[in-house]
Amino acid sequence: MHILIINFNLNDISRTDYEAVCDEVAEAFAGIPGLVSKKWLANDDTNTYGGVYLFESRQAMQDYTNSELFASLGSNPAFANITITDFEMLPGPSRVTGVS
Image 1: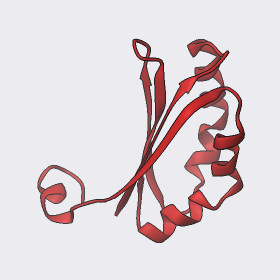
Image 2: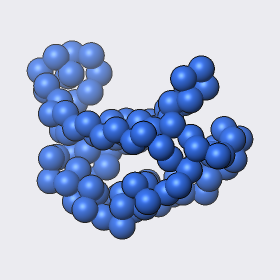
Image 3: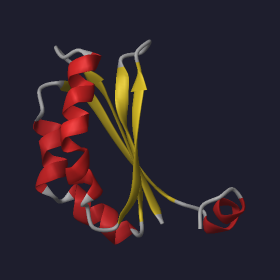
Image 4: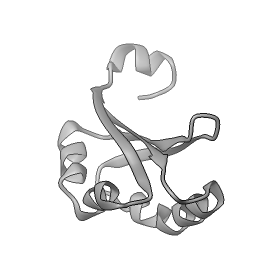
C-alpha cells in the first residue's frame, strides 16, 4: 500500500464553498483506479485543508499523480501553498492497527 498526503491553504474561497465543491467532486475521486480510500481534511485554525489517500500500490499512486484530476489541483487558484508527500505503508504494524 502507498499513502499520499496533500495539504494546502484556501485562497479566496470560504470553507462552506470549499465543502460544496468537495461534495461535487467526491464521486470522481471514488472512481480513481487503485484508490482504497481518501480522507478529506480540514483545519480552520490554520487554514489547512487537503486529503490523505490510501492506494493499493505505488504504481496506482503514480498513475493518479499523472492524471488530469491531479493536475487540476495544482492549477486551481483556490489552493495555495500546496504540499505533496508520499509514503510507503509499513504492512506489519498496519495490519495490527486495522489496515490489511
